[in-house]
Length: 214
Length: 214
Image (cartoon, rainbow over all chains, first blue to last red):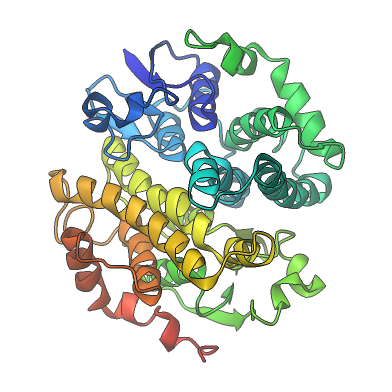
């Protein structure tokens, strides 16, 4: 059995839940409460010295970290249904769309960065929100420019079946809305995210549906 | 022929140069001067709307972006010599080490973030340097905890041949030293980075060796 150490609101854990659901895999979910600092306790640090979620324990007992590495593992270990296209350049496209979210957007707006802005730089709430919205706007503008114009875009980010690009897009859209970012300049992203959210695999992975949701 | 649109000091471009060298691939390098804003010109935006380097043009004329996506493409397109181990859980380990650098460290310290700190938040140089060093220390502490204790670590990050984990570690170590971060708390990282840097594939990829180095 697969075990996911997770936090309902973690965007990276949300990605892994979507991927697990799209693969049709059963898994246990063990909540790690980031606001209570449970990720800094030895129990969790022994699974991941970085103290982050998600961590996926595989059926052989290995603890895997980093959402992209976990998603690639799931794709290699459970190839059906595929979450990546076949052609190598198409795979590079899907990975680059996912990485745009994972490397250019999400890292700037996670809890530890927002805490540093408040505690070390002493910025006020409005400045912090402007920071958040700035990086969302920058990333989504680039993503919209690609998805609106590249011919490979379909009802999903790549063609007409869900891929890792959608697995990364949907949690980022959720965060953008939660932090009151204006998403009207990104109609293609909104269209794709809405299409995804109507599917049970995405719906059941959403933060509000998790056992630790408050 | 492969063409790499690059900037000598870009950490992400440095990764791709190492991967290309380790694969023994010939490539043309076209400099994009980030300090002069060449990445924001239409010529470059047409290759990558995000305006970032690196961009790899493949032999079929496709423009690939995001260093991890490019490295995975190179691994799939040119499998020899492999830059990832064979077993699925080992591959997840290598990817998670690379992603720790790509998602938790580098994004916080790139040019656009440092510019935001100065221009929008009005922080002084010392505060900006403290920010830089904070995220390097946080990431390297986690990476050292893993590499020093996990049995898979060898003369390289994973075993005794270079993998994508090393491809991502070495440019990050270069940046850390450039920004005067104390790396003595990370002896395993220093040992592995030093070992890598003695190899021509890493040495020839270094910023100072590039045609646009100043």
